[in-house]
Length: 375
Image 1 (cartoon, rainbow, N blue to C red):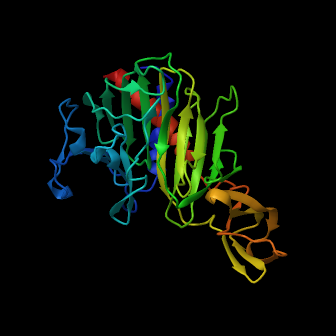
Image 2: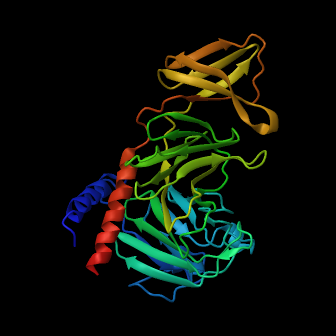
Image 3: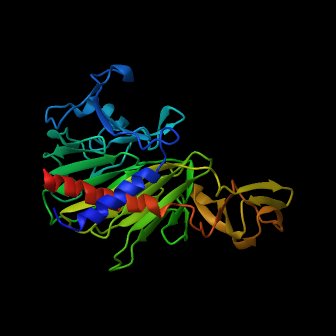
């Protein structure tokens, strides 16, 4: 084992202790993999021991007390494609609620949606600290090319104790094919605004299509977070310097918002993203109502804000730009300007979104690789 892994292992151990625990004074709950035996009653599920190769992924649940992963997402369950997508749930007061679009799940796309059945499913690691599984799709065909080209896909998931997120790592049988390669979140209208690692405001997700790549040659972690319109949870995607790509938000048709995903186009042997749903206490929530010819806005703290208005084809555009506001309620005269279904968001989010989630991701990958080398 390389000497450098010891520091990474120490880091991940410290970070795991910092995350939310199931009870005061307790460490993080263990991560477990279950065979549901096709039953909905969780008390009847059977814990999986070791690293079997004969499990049915459709009867597999992975959870750590904070989040849960199931396969497949709704479209595949209904025979409508998206066979590569898992579904993330967030534990909210003892009930697991979907944190991704129930039809799209984590939105695996390799030149085209995956529509073929898995050709293999393996448990690669299985301990109280980490579970790693892999789904193989040897029969996938990259449909964006003419003619379509076979390109096998191996999708690895890693969930660790104390994490609100999981790693999606995708290996491709061909490293010479161009085409969109994606994973992340499907549609969700509750998440309106997005922020990047530097604290910049990235515009609402439903302003057509927006792309936020890392700067060329930037050797640092990169993340973007989707802020909800309520106080439920925020969505986070993070990438490592080892893998290229962009974080995107998109609206592909009127009324369908919230697609938030990691994206690459150039040929690559693999891509990877960390997908998380983190409880949110509403500190960033700002409110706006229209009264007579004024906008009444309430903001949680001093800052610079922008008001957006829904326009043609349901796309949002900036209406009142860079308003410097103190914490509290303000009445802004509109002078006849019409605002439709307005939204308000700060330009800078400060440090509300935790970089420690990204550091967990980096340390988790180091721990996973170290444990693999030790076997």
